[in-house]
Amino acid sequence: EVQLVQSGAEVKKPGESLKISCQASGYTFTTHWIGWVRQMPGRGLEWMGIISPLDSDVRYSPSFQGQVKISVDKSINTAYLQWATLQASDTAVYYCARHVDTEYLGVTLFAVSIDSWGQGTRVTVSS
Amino acid sequence: VVTQEPSLTVSPGGTVTLTCASSTGAVATTFYPNWFQQKPGQAPMSLIYNTDNRHSWTPDRFSGSLLGGKAALTLSGAQPEDEAEYYCLLYYGGVRLFGGGTKVTVL
Image (cartoon, rainbow over all chains, first blue to last red; front, top):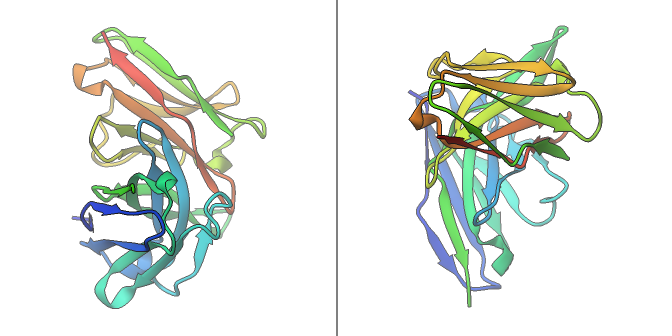
């Protein structure tokens, strides 16, 4: 059974740094891209970016490029999302999600679908 | 921008269709539409991938399709437990974008 287990809730002050995690189990970690999704209070889902655990290739949404860093440690089947300097507007629930490739005309299109989700990590940034 | 109906209401046992439109034009299978269900306080759950494929855990009352240039999710035989927010996700090559979500009320 695929499982994505995220780290616990965090309360931080503006200007602080933070790294949250997502540990995968139940499948070969390097075969699927892992992505991060933000959900601000009372709002919808926002796709932030993805990382390949195989080679640490990272792709960011333009909305989040330069704002966060996505990384991975394949030795412990864990993906990370980190901030160097938090702002109040980073207050949200963050989900990790396993992405799935698909084939189109003999070409592999990476990470076009999502099949599994972590339970979410609530991040509160407040002075 | 990916656009969904803000809210829809369906009677128990009834049928409702949610749609997902792209500001770039008609949604095709090459957008690989995904659909997700999210209940209050819970993580999203994946329902449909690549336009019309159910996951093994997806009830067969949910079906995906393309309809009038949009991706569509049809719920046939709505149950009270289907009351939730539903999101679509479209693939744009380098970027994936979620729709704003549709709140479905079963009443």
